[in-house]
Amino acid sequence: MQQPIEKVQGQDHTGRHQWQQRERPTRLERRVEFETYGATRDFLDRLGVFSEQQQRFPDISFGRTYVNLTLRPADESEGAQLQEDDHAFAAGVDGLLD
Image (tube, rainbow, N blue to C red; front, side):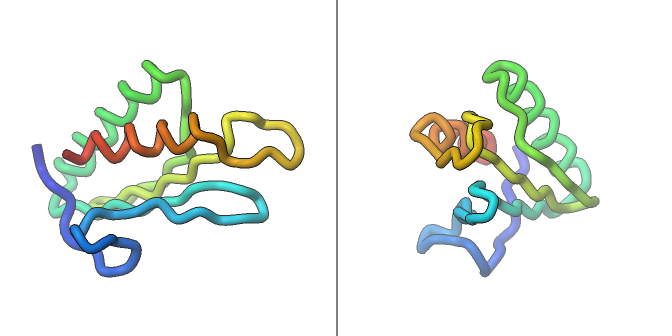
């Protein structure tokens, strides 16, 4: 499995990419960069399977060697906030990178 390449912004001390919480609208965002298109494609395939299993579908944009993810609250009602389930899904996506 291809590991993501290093990215300075948005990493913790271990070098892992981190989700950024944003407001207006409330969401989690993350960018993951890869060394090759094949590695990007492999991650997208794993993400697709995981999303189908969880029945949870983040917004995705991608290029040759990167993927941008946006995860909105599972509760789609007005003023909904991120919940434990939302963070658990984000952690599951992180696990696809290991």
